[in-house]
Length: 163
Image (cartoon, rainbow, N blue to C red; front, side, top):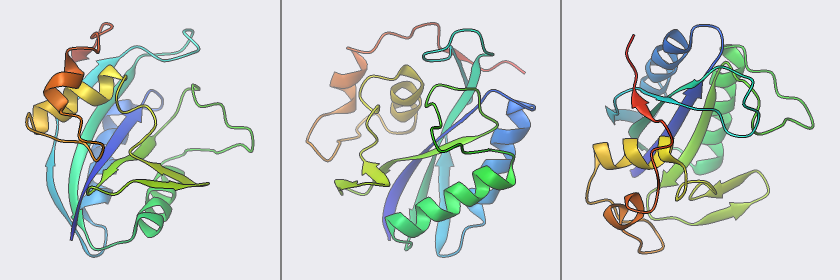
């Protein structure tokens, strides 16, 4: 089994419901066990500022699925929860749900459809702060340590979600 870290984000159609539902769906994946999930965080949107704040969380799974099969399941969950992917999908648009594989064990994967570690993992507050909440001793595949990274990432208004 591989330890996998999944980032979750939503800012449309009742984000708390979207995140809750996605965690339930992730816990039901075959050959996969839900280990933990972070607190929920409110973050400002990247890029386009004229959209609602995001609700973010991170889930830890242990899985026997391959990275590509896991990605297929994540995209299915996104679609089932109303995500519409356009051919030229802007990465900073509002979303019903965004699921990203942040880490897949100690693997470094770079194929057209999947980059692991996720390309924004080291500079996004809505990723780093939930990661350190879940594991303050986390070491990334490149040898970087979460406690060193968190010192370089400003909170940018990141708050715990208050429902």
